[in-house]
Length: 367
Image (cartoon, rainbow, N blue to C red):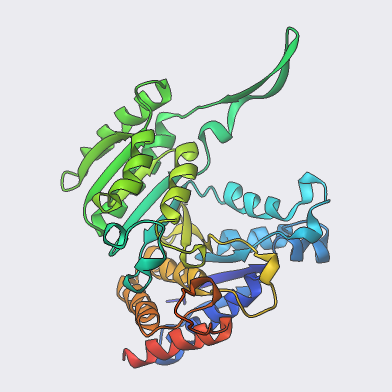
């Protein structure tokens, strides 16, 4: 049986720095747990443009289609701001999502106990928070037609179309229910069925799919109320299912419950391949952070947690994902802090590399 395969795309800015720490973790699993991965590496974003003149070479795209999982660091930076839109670094990321048909975007909002004070909300509201937002990623108002800016009489009008087919809603909903079966068996589907026909269809399809999962408690909520509830009582949720537009907004809202973008991973999943594993790409939410690139200040935890998501959702290694997440919890509980996690207690920050080393040490201590 072949080893699971991973394509690493460090990208730009702090991407290579945080991905170096993920490689340490992957190496540890091979040496200490005898879990071997076939790892390859290539270019994306500005790094790919510098070498190939495009943000994603065709050969790299072909590799991404063949591996079990893609780990991506970050793309973009001020050096590429003046490029034509068609070759901006972000186009490489969008091409990966589109051609791999990664329709289910998983954005966890998990608040480690040691960081509860970093949230903008009261500690008792966010302590122990662990929710998952599943955002449909490849349809909806960002892709619907007609779209554009047109002349209408004596003025211009901007048009975007919210469009969903039953099958697009169904596959996202089914992914949400499958997630819930691994978690606390609750799905809250959020839309605007009170004012949008697409919301009515969304609710109907989610309800129909829910009947295939009798163990899962399904509830419905208007998305605007959902945003309010996320900041009022976020721990009422387990899995939130929502569309592309509302998911974009709600996931960013939930992100700030945890205190730092440097702590937030994500996964984008598609249809199963021949081996039964879904096409998948994992990436931290934080972006390329050009202002701290090369300074050893970047927090690698979001990227390491993205690898933990790969263990859980691509490789069926939930126990190992738990082990890695527990190691991160231990490191934070012991007081290790990169610059983005510093409070007002005078604690000195540790470097990107030191945080990665601390996570590996905690993993070793877990044996």
